[in-house]
Length: 228
Image (cartoon, rainbow, N blue to C red):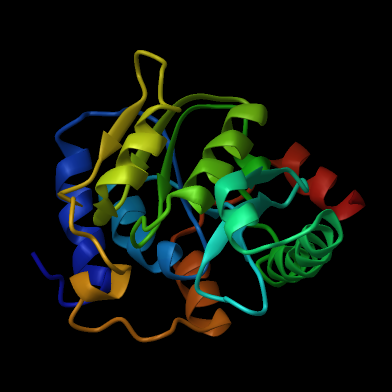
């Protein structure tokens, strides 16, 4: 299966999620591509759209090879086999984490007023990305949502490797948790192969989608964000 682009992937997922009758929920996209996919989902579910700021950790020598992921709280998920395979020491790992933390903080400031934490706790959070290769970024997003009070988590992605799907499902242990993915491929190679159009998403595109769909932040959450 190949999607025309992220918007079509979002519409396909929206149809699948609609069948679940989730009730009140928050839709949270992982910037950047995940937010584009999440837009049609939030519209279909009549739910607010937020950004959950997680980002992969990779070394400068192998930028496409993730060895972990980090959220905006600074919590990191590490895959130690990959750390060893890359020959990274503790100092190198900490340097990468510091670089990623700055980028995560930049995005959180740029998309101010749309942080997932501003809507939590909540009964259900639908966490969306444009695909799972390793699943590490999604694992970090799940941990973030759980710590901030999501009572149930629904992971919605257009495509995933068999291994990533297994790892993510293992974190969804509560009765109301769900994993929605139309394509789980044992021969998965790259997310981009499941899209005809997989161009890079810009910050402006993310901001426009968030601005179009996002619901007003509760007053007390807005006050917290202003004082942060």
